[in-house]
Image (tube, rainbow, N blue to C red; front, side):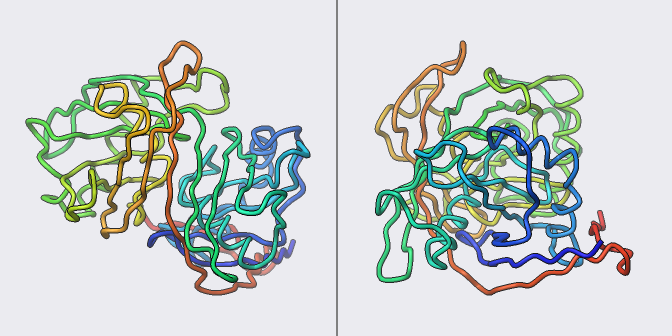
Length: 333
């Protein structure tokens, strides 16, 4: 089978986003969560073909657009990246919103605002625009919460670590400063990547994480290493590991949501507080605790994240199963 995709490529605060503007598969389901399950069952080859080499790379992330299921909403979004078909992606949302507005792929029901259906729930958008250019996108995310504290895990070289696991659309193991870990600044990205794969595997082998209201969202997928900010305007710094060998170049939207939920649970953030998160390359997201809520039995927060994105080009991509032995992509680990 030969399949063509038209993609808009760009980045959100340094992290790649590939919006599949045409060529996405027809999916069954009455929600984006159900459509995600159909995609995972039958079409994950599209994700690997577009995200992995030779058409993508280890840091690649993307999205596919769908009509909304509720007429009150503007659009449905499916997130794809090297780590999987995600319930939610913050930097992907900011990039997707920017690209589809600048390219006229959507006409908002209310100027300056959008309602997005994503597999994790409803995400509210406020954006600023000057002429054709979208200058900033603020997303109000799904409820985020601290799932478990002080999990012990043995890390090569560093030794025993204690981590918290927090949810912000995906589950994150958060490594804060402690006896065997001072700051992400003291280690290379290569070291953090190697350790993250092992930490994730060991935590998932002993602990189960499942969303209290959606059993299709389960498992620890990301590791968030912390450090002191390099910019005086930042609250904190982080490097998020995902996939098999990737460090997020942006401050990570769902990771920032997870970390704000962690801080709120520990009394370090209150409703209305701002949290400026810095990435490994120095870019920033402005987070805010919009309100405190309950998520099942858990205390949770509604976080918001604001950032920007830029289009870098347009890409007609061919996946030809009949002729290309690497049609479905590959990774060199």
